[in-house]
Image 1 (cartoon, one colour):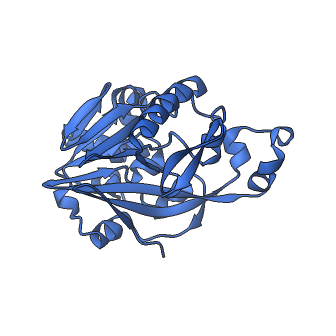
Image 2 (spheres, one colour):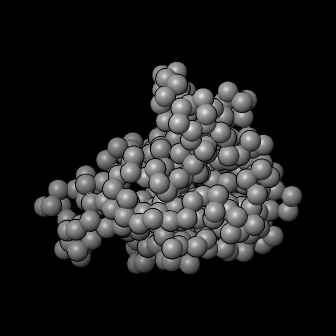
Length: 277
């Protein structure tokens, strides 16, 4: 079973929580016909691959921050599960994080695998329970606005999770950049969704970007024109350019929801590559 990976970033402890994996055909995600597969990538596209699903916990002096929340047993709702994992609460316990002490939950974007772990689901919506009852839940304002109809349906997944947090007065839609204090800030990175947001963490001169779904596989770093077929590719390209420039200038560590562990961007001739940290 996977266990959390913990990294030090200045005064912060960063825990990468792997909540399972999905078995996907990457060429389908990227919308690439077989005729468009470069020879060097044919093995990558010819068969299904396992794509991890990761959340991140940040332990800072006096702060406990969770970026995205997934429940591994619910991954079947977004694809074909490829691997089981300990639950989110078990992994938080393994790194010494108390759900009741989490003060901020950042949802990079409201796709199911990024918010389904916000609640303990009951047999009915009325029996659902928030897992982070003291935390403000930060969602991109453009994404929150787009959820309007889904939030009105009591049985919809987004209503049961983010809607429940909103009914407790815990959801804050965020437009643009937001300084959250203690070196943590939100950076708008639209593309995957209109309100998609990344998280920047700076401590003792070290920098981390938590990217959500800005990238889904390292091959997108090597070939920046590639992206998942459901995203706004022009917006994604602009967001990537912004983050790439900052990450290279700062020598930043990077964590993406669907790229295992952490990494950094490295120059490779005229292009870039993702290097595992």
